[in-house]
Length: 112
Image 1 (cartoon, rainbow, N blue to C red):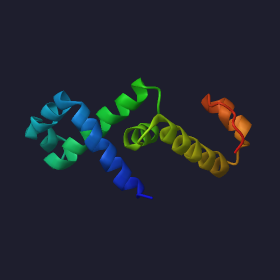
Image 2 (cartoon, one colour):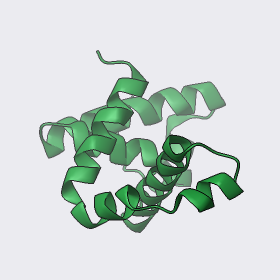
Image 3 (cartoon, one colour):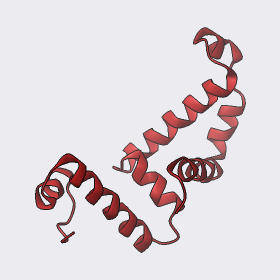
Image 4 (cartoon, one colour):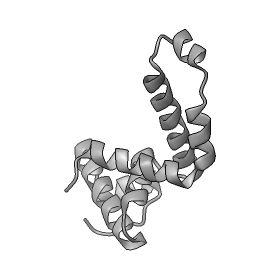
């Protein structure tokens, strides 16, 4: 399985390919704005890209990690399987019963 960072970078690449207007905007950022934030242009650009990615996830009612999985999955079924797998891991780490976790996050309660 790919590393999380590799998955995110792949998702960001796909996201940019689907939003050429955003790519143009990122390619023409003002260097003075980066300088004002005491960031390199690469850092400033990356921050703007992540903000746009997170806004897109929110617009789709997804967490950013879910949008990442959605973009890199080969099918809706693969996405749902990966998504539930991660949600189950999060529920375990939080010490929540699966049914309680599903209720909190609006997920269909399918047995773990």
